[in-house]
Length: 124
Image (cartoon, rainbow, N blue to C red; front, side, top):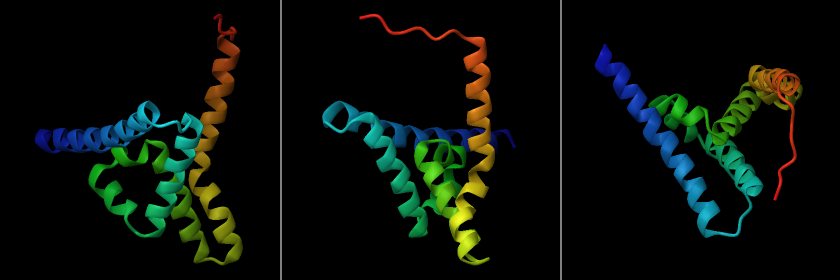
């Protein structure tokens, strides 16, 4: 049982690390801005899920594949595909429904930390 948990952690770390390493290499060796890289990774998650590939990565690595931004794209695509079974409206709303918990957590935690901490401008 312990070896199964350790193996799961190792797989998640390797896959998540590879995704992050690719992003870091793009930042270091190209002129692509970090914002565009985020969008490309999100779209890559959508496209890989639409092609049926990303689900295998999620099954193999778990959180290592779902935590990076490409995992958010996967979640949106999976929700839209599941919602499409209920019709056009389900396809349009399925992605938001499946990602609602994460979006809500980001908004709530962002608000709470904005109340707790005082933002300061960066000094050059």
